[in-house]
Image (tube, rainbow, N blue to C red):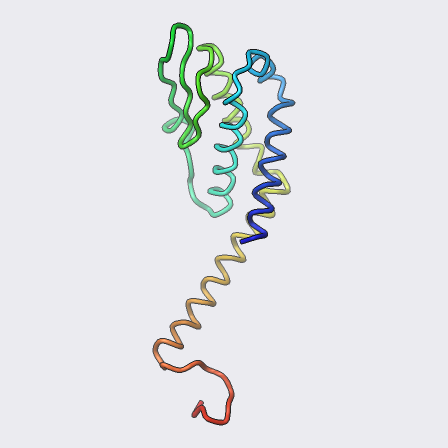
Length: 150
C-alpha cells in the first residue's frame, strides 16, 4: 500500500497546484474562500481512484449539492467533499470546474499509474484467493518437501 500512498500524495499535490493556477478560480481564491481548493482536491482525488478501479464514483448531476447558508452565501458539497461557505455566484464556477477536471484528470500520468496499480492489486488478489482456496481445501500448504505426499 505504500506505493498507493505515495501516488495518492503526488496526485493531490498535482491537483492542488493545477487548481490554484486555474484562471476560473482566481476570484474564489481572492475572496479567501479557503475550503474550496482542499474540497476540490479531495473530490477529484476520490473520483480518480474510483475511475481507476472502474467504479462509477461521484456523479456531478446527483452528488453536487448547494445549500443556502447566510445572506449571499451557500454551502457547497460534492459527495463527501465539503467546500465550506462560498459566495452564491461562485457555486456554478466550482461545479463547472469540477466537471471539466473530472474529464481532464483521466489524461494525466498519475491516473494511468493508478489504473496500472489497481489492476496489479486486482490480479494479486485473484492469485492470493486461489492459493488460499488450495490451502483451505487440501488443509496443507502446497510445495515440495520430503514429508508432503504432493
